[in-house]
Amino acid sequence: MTAEGHPERSREAFFGRLKGPKLRPGQTALIEEVLPQLRPDLTKPAPEALTDLFPVPVEAVRLEIGFGGGEHLLHESGRFPRTGFIGVEPFVNGMAKLLSAIQDAPRPNLRLYDDDATRLLDWLPSASLAGVDLFYPDPWPKRRHFKRRFVNARNLDRIARVLAPGSNFRFASDIDTYVDWTLRHCRDHAEFEWTAERAADWHTPYEAWPGTRYEAKAIREGRPPAYLTFRRR
View 1 (cartoon, rainbow, N blue to C red):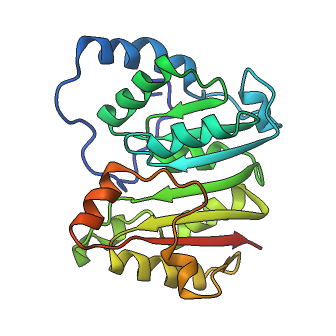
View 2 (view 1 turned 180 degrees about the vertical axis):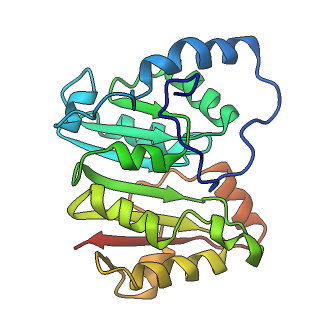
């Protein structure tokens, strides 16, 4: 067992650094005092009805892997108070930013996990999620690092297992090689079908998309994002 109460298992190294600039005292207090109240306890079996993970009534549960600064997760959890959201972000500074935001805008329909997303995926019940989002993951652009990209056959198996049939796996990136990589891997996976019918479908942001600071920077630098949606068969 790790000190944070996670099951003992090595990380699968799909993400880079875990910490950035030193946190302010208030941010450290949020990590130490508030995050444990929101973190799913993976040392216990997942509830048979994943909606029971939340203290308020919710009708479905969605997962966002690697939420960065939390812009999209905060936006969506506010738009859909009857949906439960689980956000995963191992980067401490990103987690602290979101925790600070929900002090001013509480989200009782939100749960947060600060470790390897594969541990959470393996813990979740089968067909328990109404959607999985993976936006702007670390692209690991060097060929020798491609094995560290989160999209791979094993992780697509994991995502397919926890997604309810007919639900969507959404992927956004401004790195064309990672977009192509994801299209190939999902095309080759029997449980996913790409929903796009024309070019505008993957060049147009998702409905009510709030954007992120990272995305704005990518667009300024001439890297147009792609927004891919794959349906679980």
